[in-house]
Image (cartoon, rainbow, N blue to C red; front, side, top):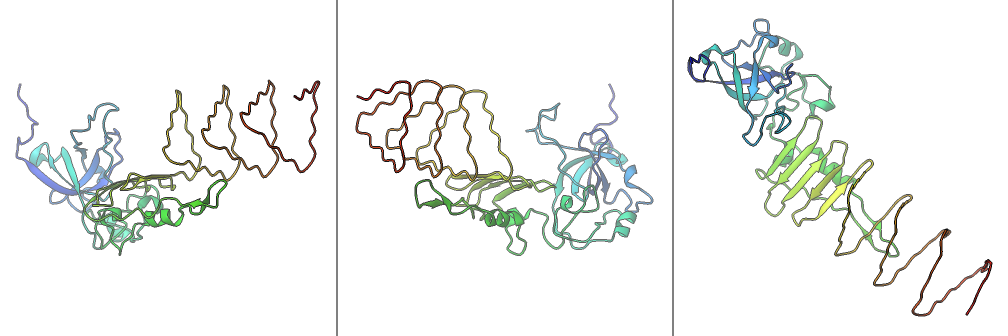
Length: 328
């Protein structure tokens, strides 16, 4: 059977271009790319809607089959990409192999963007697109005169990423320990990345994942744009902060072993509901300090066994009421 559309039929044609549209009607992760040197920069001659949809090659670690694998929606309007044409010089079946970072030097006007391709629009503000205007595809790039590589990966003192400072400035400190004058502080100040060791992924809205291999500063960090995060430091210590509500549902058993101390601080009420038995074993001493009223309601029997002495000191009255009271 004769094939007329295989790679290299005409010749293997590479291309370099910029993404102008990612709203693929087939939801396949395709994008429209204005290819440098092949498509006119004049949008009047070749409007974005006339550009062919380009397939995005995925890693072989992704099945790209059904719901299995990664979604290929990492590119945004303004991303520079490199690829090739499946149909050679016909240039109607582009395939993207990867994206390329750069250092934007200037931004055109909105008028330039509407008129010409390869032209970036809007004023540089230093804030991600989603924090400027939702759905505005002319918001990239949003910074000039600095590399496109994430600021967390570079840790450039001239271009600090806001998240580490935001986290450290809101870290909890001097949290009291029960029945003690001791306090504890939240683990903070962990970010000390060095280029090129920090592997960063950040989404448009501001979700972040870091795998930091900086020597002697190794970390794992996952951050939600609202401020909830977890972070693991070089020694394996972990801090988790939830800025809203936290729910843990366990359908089976739950086993927790703590080799050290447990310090629990609740700033409001603590309610515990146990439908079965509650067994507590204390091999040492048990100290309870109740600054309010203690109320106990038992619908069954109460059995107390003391192997030693019992001392009860009451500064007020003692009232005992029962159908029968036996004292031995």
